[in-house]
Length: 247
Image 1 (tube, helix red, strand yellow):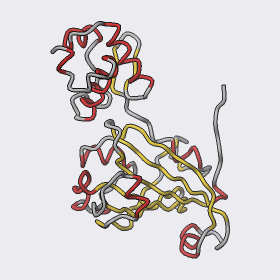
Image 2 (cartoon, one colour):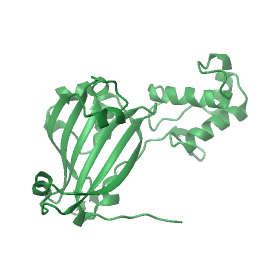
Image 3 (cartoon, one colour):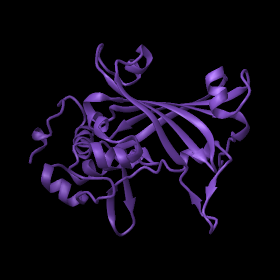
């Protein structure tokens, strides 16, 4: 395949066109998370371009977090680890009898196909009238509800979820999305703010109305950079912590 067959805007630098081509193939499922991609030599031969150009395209994908180099093994499609996100912000943990941390329980309370509020529509980059699947969910540790989640997903990509029993939803949603809907989360952006608990959320989280709560807003994207999930998580402030390593 020649460089003219990359199918991108020829005004862009060649390495960027190759970068976009590889990213598009990852998004299409040609190479799945955890799988090795062709070597730089193989990509050079396939696309008929210089090795240095291939290396620069791969370097950018590594920097973007889509690929991961493993010494002596090759370059792999990176599988993001979102499991630790929950415990970055909340102190209370669930551990088994051996003291190993377990994934907090996820409990889906409600699922509906709806027209989203304007702010959700804009976040998911949907057109007016496009529907979403809305999930209301709780996360629990040691029997306590740590936070309440409102989740919105584009109906066009996640319609299979409407036929799944609520009890069958997994504690970790992202592997579940991949298994059931063939939708893979590649990255997410989170913002954390403080709000005041209203009567409904205070009763659910067992805090006093008017007390501060933590709100985590997350927008998750697929390997094609398109938004796949918009999520609001509200948790009790007394379980909140902020932890970061600075080198």
